[in-house]
Each structure stands twice: as structure tokens, then as C-alpha cells.
Amino acid sequence: MAKKIIVRHIFIIIFLIIFFYGNECHEAKAENNNVNIDTPRNVRVYRHSNTSLKLKWRTVKKADGYIIYRYSKKNSKYIAVKNIRNTKTTEWIDKQRETDKVYKYKIAAYKKINQKKYFSKKSDYVMVKTYQRDKVKINAREPKVSNRKVYLGLCSAKKIKTRVLASKYGTNRNKKAFHTKVRWYSSNNIVAKVDKNGKITAGTAPGECNIYAAAHNGRRTKIKVVVKNYARAKRYYNCWEEEDLNTLVYEHTDVIQDIAEYFSVNRLKENETISIYLNNVAEVVVEPERKFSEKISREIEDLLVNFPYYIGINVDVDCIDFVSKKEDTNEARPGHVIFWFDNDCSQWSGQIASHWQAVRFYPI
Image (cartoon, rainbow, N blue to C red; front, side):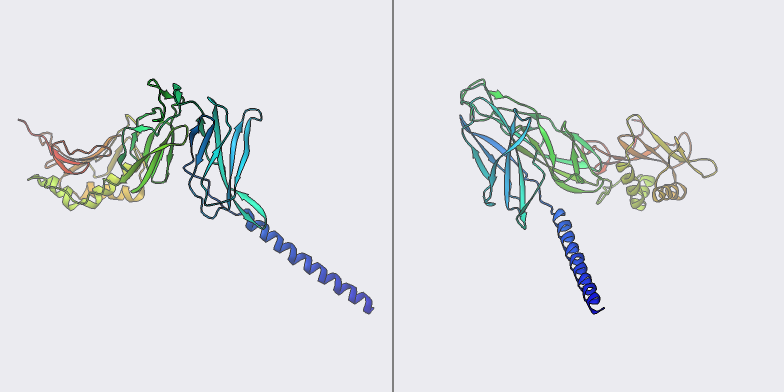
């Protein structure tokens, strides 16, 4: 009997050891699977000589090394060609390459935990050519861009034009880049994103970021993007003696800015328009019928009902127009307080703030 009890106790102890050890192993494995390593950024590659190429990249924090991959046509995939174990080193020369040939590279960072390597995602590829300096088709320099700094309103967009020129280090008078496609990157897609054609689109909140135009070899040009909420004007200029316009701008500032901001973010499509006004029984009419957020619906109704003059709101793809009349008659000339989503109206008549305009047209 005593022997059976001892055996049972031994079995229980072994079971508990296996259970806890197994759990520890499982937890360690789960923790290691959650290792996050940044992908190497700003990878560039240069012609170093007729038969060698130099790669450079930005340091990845907490990495223990880097693996460099070169594309193999024979294997139709990227093959590891170099393990960089010195994390202070962020460049490498690939020697003994064939002259007048194009090579592609990618780089991954890794971190060692318990003798096991955990890798980042591979970087985007960079492509480069070996050549003698008097050749016509050579590598590119960083792209030339139409704008180095861009200001955008919320959800506004701007297309950047580019030109890709040959490297300065070619000696042929007729030299040109062998590859002219530009790749685009954003440092913060929430602030502003960019598509493959260089169209930058701002996000829904103010902020700053950088957009990069990169040539085939990773050489890039930085474009600073500043996203502003132009609907939120810090101050307005004088609206002259126009009593209804002054009342709208200075006594209903928060409301018109809220409405302008809402339609800045919720843009209408091309050729789409909305008219908002009160009918004969003081009900808000939206043509064509459309639902807004609860807050904006309430503010629109309060403005139209409580404004001491007649007022309506027109929205299209370019602007929102608050149309006011001192009297609700056909003879009364309408005044306009207009917020332009994308246009700085500093050269226009009646500017009262950046992107804001207040005008009433009288006969000359």
C-alpha cells in the first residue's frame, strides 16, 4: 500500500514538472514569436566601380545584424549573400560583379534570442547597374520634383511632377538614366498618403510628414507636407458694413467652422452638389436627400432656424457657400461667405481669412 502511495506521489510530481515546464516553454515560444524588428529603411545602392556596388541603409535599433539578399535569375528569387554581424556597419561593397549588368538587392534586419535569429521583413528592392563611366545608359540621381514643400487642407490632394536624370558621375554627354520609374513613400500615412503616381492626399487631421520620391537605386528626394485645417481660421478680417455677413462670421464662428470642417473631410464627388435651406414651415430641406452626422445636422438646423436673416447652404466639390439675404425677397442681393477646400483666395476680392471669402456683388 505504501509503495503504491509513493509511486502515485512520484507520478504527480513528474506530471507537475512536465506541466509547468511545458507552460514555461510555451510562454517563451509565444514571447519570441512576438519579437518585432523594424525593416531597414532608406536603402540605397551605388556604382562603386566598373565591377563593384556599394549598399547603404539606415541603422535599425535593437538589431543584432543584417542579411543582404541579391536577386538570382537562375533561382528566380532573392538569395542571401552576406551576413553583417557588426550592427555599427550600415554599408557593404559587393565586389567582382559583371560590368554593364543590372543587380537587385533587399536587406533584412535580425535579432538573436536564445541563439535563434528573428528576422524583419525584407526591405523594398533597390536596383543598380555596373558600367564604365562613358556609357550612355547609367544609374539615376535623386528625382527632381515640382514641389519640395506642400501645404494641404484636410483631405485635399496634390499631384507632384517628377523628372529622373542620369547620375552626375557619368562622363558621356548623352547620358541618361537606364530606368526612370519613381517609387513613392510616406513617413506617416495617417497624416498624408501618396499613390504610385505621386498624388499626395492629406488625412483628416492636421499634422506634418515627409513624402519621398525614390529612384530605382533608392536615391530619394524629400517633400515636406504640412496638413492644415483651414476651416478653423484663427481670425477673420473685417467684412465691411455687411451686417448679415458680419453677424454670420463673428457671431456664428464655431458653427460655420464645424460645418466647413465636416464637408472638408466628407467631400462630395465631382459634379455632385447639395442645397440646404428652410421650407415655408421652417423645416430643413436637403436636396438631394442626404444624412449627416448628428452633431452637424443639429448645428445646421440651429443656424438656419436661429439666424436673424435668411440663409441657405450650398455645397459642391470645391467649396461650401453660406448664402445670406438681408430680406427674403427676389430683389434682395445675396451675400456669400465661402470656404474653399483647396484654394487660397488671397488674390481674390473679399478674402477674410486663408481659404475664406465674404462678398456681395452690387451693380457697377
